[in-house]
Amino acid sequence: MTKDQIRDLIQAGLPNAQVDVRGDDGQHFEAVVICPDFAGKMPIAQHRMVYATLGDKMGRDIHALQLTTRAAP
Image 1 (tube, rainbow, N blue to C red):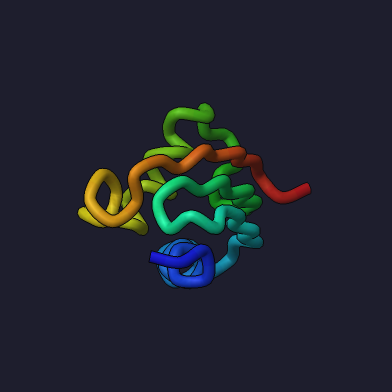
Image 2 (image 1 turned 90 degrees about the vertical axis):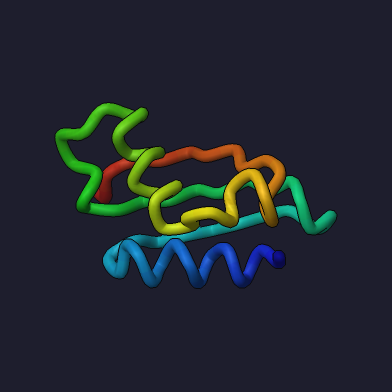
């Protein structure tokens, strides 16, 4: 799994999101996701929305994903 593939999956599931993914070892990644759909949601709910876009790849193809999420300004 590459950072570009992760970015594409997140953007496919959250089309209004701005997504920046970093990580070069193929298993550990950091993502910043800014999305208007996060407005009014607690951080845990925002993270669940991102994880839902990745499905079963979390824990299998992606060992670790550090998330920073926020609603668009």
